Every structure is written in structure tokens, then in C-alpha cells.
Amino acid sequence: MRSTTSQPTDGTSQAPESRAQGRRAQGRRARGRSGLAVAYLLAAATAAALVVDAIVHLKDAFFYDANTGALLSQGQLFRIQAVVAIVTALAVLALPRKWPVWLFAALAAGSAAAAVVAYTYIDVGPIAGLPNMYEPSWGPPGKLLSAVAEGLGTLLALAGLGWALAMHRPAAHAARAARAADAAGAAREAQEAQLTQASAEGEAAPRHRR
Image (cartoon, rainbow, N blue to C red; front, side, top):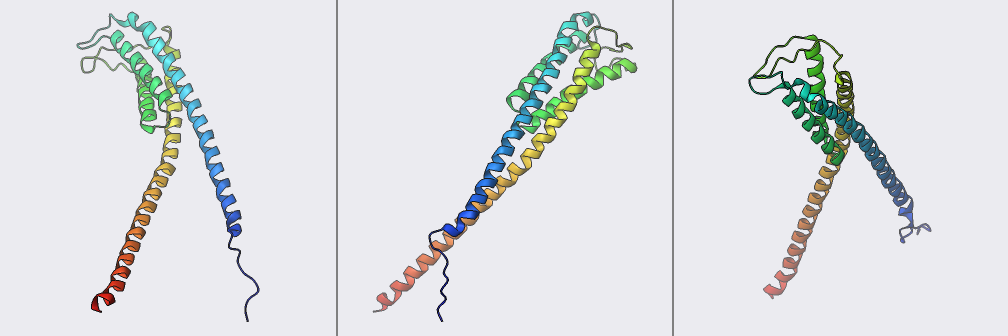
């Protein structure tokens, strides 16, 4: 007995699945836009903290030019720190999706924050040609402000690093999946070509024998 039901052949049965895929794609795009907005906010806040740190170091550098070491003076170290902070701020603003930039920002701000705290409470002494920067007070103008900016910059940079790594993993997975799909498609095409060639040779063989 012939069945009276049949599947539609015009592709309408696939419409719900296509709509679901479209909704999923729209959701991914929306999440990507919101995630990028978060990245730019983190980048702006991190850059602001680094710029504050740079301004304080540039402003106060001449106070410490007299404190010299075998290689550099403390004033020169302040100017180097200011340049590093400015370059890092520009890098974070320009490349907020790159996790190495966030890692460098966290190291730059974190090392500066650790140094100011250490030299406030510990008499480290001269190290490797650098001057003794021991200063057991938070009173000098801008010192506390720069320390707070460095600490905030470190926390913000770590947050940006976490975001960038979280975004990097799905992107890398999607790239691997795309490469795997391309490889599978190439393998299928090669197999189909071999089957087509074998079929053509099989059809030609009887004619050759005749």
C-alpha cells in the first residue's frame, strides 16, 4: 500500500532550522559587539591610569636628578617609566583585542606599583648601577596619586587580559573547526574525483576489449 504522506521537496521543512541558525548568529554578533565595548572601556580606563602615572613621573623627575647611580639617576628612571607608560597606554587603546598588549600593560603598571611600595617600606639600597631610591614617606607631591594609578592600572590590565584570553579561545576553536571542515571537504572532493576517474576507466575498458 502506497503511503499518502510525503516530505515537502521545496525546502520548507528546513526553514525552522535556518531561522534558529540565524538567531544564533545574531546572538553571537551581539555578544561580540558587547564584548568589544567592554574591551574599549577597559582600555580607556587603563590608558587613563597609565597617563596619570606618566604625568606624575615627568613632573617630579627633576626633583630626583641629583640621586644618581653608576648607570642612571632616579630622575632618568622616572622619565623612562613615563615613556613606557605612555607607549603602553597607546598600545592598549590601539590593540584592545590582543592579549599580549594587556599582559605588557599589567607588567608595566604592576612593576611600577611594586617598586614604589617596596622603596617606601624597604631600604633596598643600590642595585645593578641604579641609585638607592629608598623614600620612607608618602608625602612627596604626586607619589600617592601615581601609586594609586599604578595599582588601578594593574587591576584593569589584568581584567583586560582575562577578557582577551576568553575571547581568544573561541576564536581559535572556530579557526581550527574551519580548517578541519576545509580539510574534510578537500578529502571528499579528492575521493569523488577518484571515484569518477575509476568509473570512467571502467566504462572505457569494455569498449577497448571490443
